[in-house]
Amino acid sequence: MHPTTASRIRSLVALYPLTVWLAAGFLLLHTGLRAVLMAQTWHAAQMTLASAAPVLGTGLVFDLVTLVLLLPAVLLLESALGTRKQPGRIRHAAILAVAALVFFALGFGVMAEWFFWDEFGVRFNFIAVDYLVYTREVVGNIRESFPVGTLLGTLAVGTLALVWASRGWLERAAIPAASRRSRIVVWIASVMVAAGLSAAWSMDARQGANEYQKELSANGLYSLAYAFGNNEIDYFDFYATRPQAAAAVAVLPRIVSATPPKNVVIVTMESLSSSFMAHGGNTRGLTPNLDRLAGEGLFLANLRATGNRTVRGLEALSLAIPPLPGHSIIWRKNNRNLETLGAVLADHGYVNRFMYGGYARFDNMDAYFSGNHYQPLDRSQFPERHRGFGNIWGVADEHLYDYALEQMDRDAARGKPFLMHLMTTSNHTPFTFPEGRIDLKRSRPGAVKYSDYAVGRFIEMARSKPWFKDTVFVLVADHCASSKGRTSLPPENYHIPAIVYSPAHLAPHTDTRLASQIDLVPTVLDLLGLPEHTRFMGRSVLHAYPDAGRAFIGTYQKLGYLTPGQLVVLSPGRRIESWRLDAQQAIAAPMRHPDALVARAVDAYQETARRARDGLLQHVNLSDGLRVR
Image 1 (cartoon, rainbow, N blue to C red):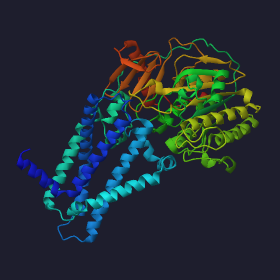
Image 2 (cartoon, rainbow, N blue to C red; image 1 turned 60 degrees about the horizontal axis):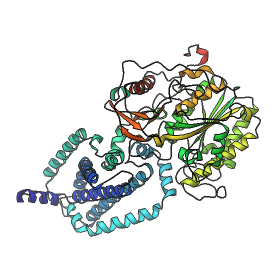
Image 3 (tube, rainbow, N blue to C red; image 1 turned 180 degrees about the vertical axis):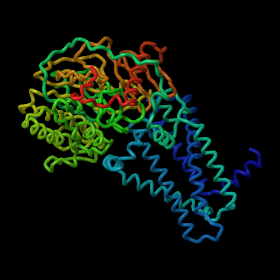
Image 4 (cartoon, rainbow, N blue to C red; image 1 turned 60 degrees about the vertical axis):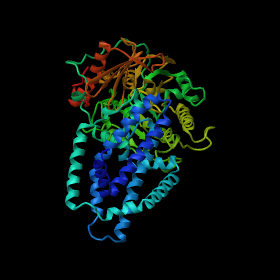
């Protein structure tokens, strides 16, 4: 480096001691985090020394870009703390306190991102954005899952030690070496550079051979800001389209015949991957009740969730639509009086309830279901006798089921058919549950086995009720336990169990065809003998398919169309990817775009977006005489 250039850099460093100190801390913390995450994920990410270099290099660039975007705020802070007059002890103490608070916040963010990666296998994304809205549940979950006091105490001690060791350097900020005019010029320049870089840089700059590597090459704070600004995505502006979507597939003759039941109970089980069941190859005996019920009912052995969030599962199990990019419909504006399962059944005199073991304000469940012909009930409305064991996410599953049984007894006694949609919480961190129920302790396997115990107990208690023989039960997960994978849409991480159970109306049968979570609503209506399901975008599994099956899987930006052996992925920028799958339906290799399959994928998602945009998801009451046939 030229001596003059080096001296100018040293002068600039000396002019802004607090900014330089915080910038160095930022880079060290985020580089250290990347190194830890890379080591932790080395095997899963298929890392090598050759692939590590570009990931680390791109990561450093992402960190520098994020730092430049934050720089105007830091420079402004340093200018506010400095004065040309002789500073006293108070100003020196204020500078040290600010340095400590900012560094502690940076350290806390890095720690939080480490835990987030451990749970989701990605940097901060749209899930983190949504979680910021619900600080009570999220903070409570962290407190119940981790030794927060020890971690924060250690971080605080380390921060104070570092600030005290750096006090001689930091206190220079009390008397700025640069004039006010110079500081203003530098600040304006930093704003201009940050604005230009913000417009020029994007998440497309990530590098890596797979999704893990791409995520490692990013910066968590940048990813969080990007997700915050991209939660609403217009399909027609960013995704592949076709001149005209194809017509819906005609309904074929049913392959299962049954006398219609009257009542419907949907049990949406938190984070229950198919791999936990013996039917999914698990040998630990975690789900004896579900495995037994799968053998006694209609077991959909190859069904896929539409997403990796609870709201996506609830959307699929009420609206029966493929996932749209950005927010779920449950989060969007104008999401009242939609054509949901509850709306259709309300036209036939049903009493519809949505019961959640936690607080239904979470993920906007309360507003969505109350606006769509359901009566929401959550833990705040449970009587004291049903508020036993619970954690930050909700009461134990058994208490939810017990109160649901009381509600269904009342409806049946009034002669009312009912839809009861239940959402459980026990199979969620911190994985706590009542003692003495199962032979496992607090852990993910323990939570799975407890959830299985509770649902088995629920079905056995329901079996003694007079309304049981007239009821169809749908037991299904909201999503898998993990969405981690080397690709953005790993099909194996969307495989969930689904059981349609009604011994008086359905003979035991295992259906191995590929199916989607959105197919359960049409299946229920088909089983009830109601014709209105033709407006839903799913299809009844009680019929033969004109193909080998299909499923819709997605994240907040990636939209997947899955068929046996192939996956088409639609992305912003009208990008299309095609993948060949192996025998386990996991991604094996890229392939040439199959024109017919791409057309079906685009048609399905384009039609979903068109209906949402044009208000065609709205419910039309039977009495209006306008129902589409």
